[in-house]
Amino acid sequence: MSKVSKKQRVVNALVDHGSISPFYAFNHLGETRLAATIFKLKKEGYKIDTQIENGKNKFGDEISFAKYILVEQPS
Image 1 (spheres, rainbow, N blue to C red):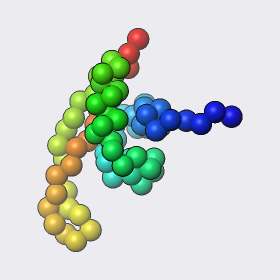
Image 2: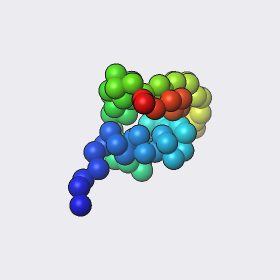
Image 3: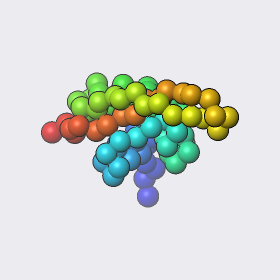
């Protein structure tokens, strides 16, 4: 059985869910550098949009975070 790379785990999550956030990536994929992985995927031809979302952290503080949305996979 071959090991799935972290880049492939991110691609799988994008395909399955349509979008991914750093919180999801950290908690479900063990990915601590999501922005760097998204950058690599874009260089490989993936079309991924970035939306800035607003929310609150566990302390009630207002925060902003990126949400990455898969638009198109390379052919």
